[in-house]
Image 1 (tube, helix red, strand yellow):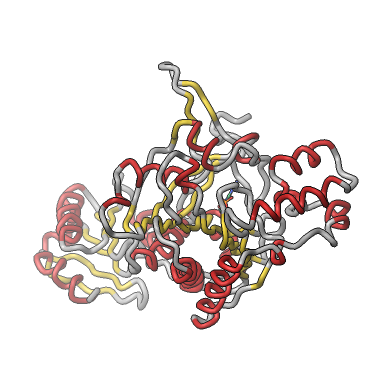
Image 2 (cartoon, protein in one colour):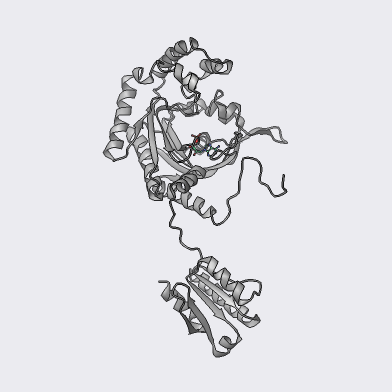
Length: 420
Ligand code: AMP
């Protein structure tokens, strides 16, 4: 292993590609910020208990993928594998739900950790932007979140994604279905681990990717046939609102998702250019989660979109993000005196809000101009001893190649004018 290699299953974001990650986070959060969602930040780790109870003891995330550790003080902690449980815990701790303003709408952005088998699109450290709307049962809220995610992806220029939609029922009808499913599954020819799964989390068996398992599931009881009237009506309303908003979706009865806390609405955004790790984001309603972690009844809904996979999806579609050059003006001093003078001009430009950079390290004209080019700057300022003696700097338009002498004292104002 090389000394400089990032840990297995992780990678660094470095320029220029890192700019895409910033742009994706910005694009995903913008519709949320415009729709009443407030920013929340929680610690990178929590008590293990929170995820064990919240995400679910029977999920892969908790049983296999969590980074857990004991602190020197004896606390059992886990690096957060997902955001929802933490955000709900934080909202409860801060009593946000008691401020008389439901739903509590929150958005977040951060790093998440899962000890998974690394492959393209699946990492041990990844990044999500998420949204949670806590404390209200209203199909319009489920629809709002799906519409905002759709809007975010479209604003980035993504087109080859699909929205899969399902309802998992509630605490009335889901247990009845669960039992019917268990009875059906127990008669199938399945391996030991899958048989254990039937007892703790039978809905996950429907999610099994293996062809020999899928073949046996054709006649499995369908959740749709077990939904109670209230769940059916709720789901129909979500569907109608999405349709009215012009957001296309596909009904997917097999969509159960890997976390235990979902009830009623569940959805996933999948991208067709990503191979096996095709889910770019997902979420759903989690009406029982608050009680599972010891809080009051707070029906809620949320989603998390993966930043890493969204970037991969953009690359797969060949979408070029319209990333503005970060530097507008690049200053190239020739000699000691010019260094002092141009460094002053750069400082003045920056204070005036103009993005400016400088050829550091006393480099020659050729190398410095190469850096100016690479910076993407619209203008360069060049000055040598003779220019300074005349009280001017050379201002070069990097697009047209035109160059003209500008009085030193007017350089900053002239650039501000030209850059609008
Ligand atoms: P989940 O919490 O599993 O529903 O994940 C939500 C989104 O986070 C997924 O759709 C992915 O885009 C992203 N994600 C989850 N796990 C990983 C991972 N191991 N590596 C990269 N992205 C991930």
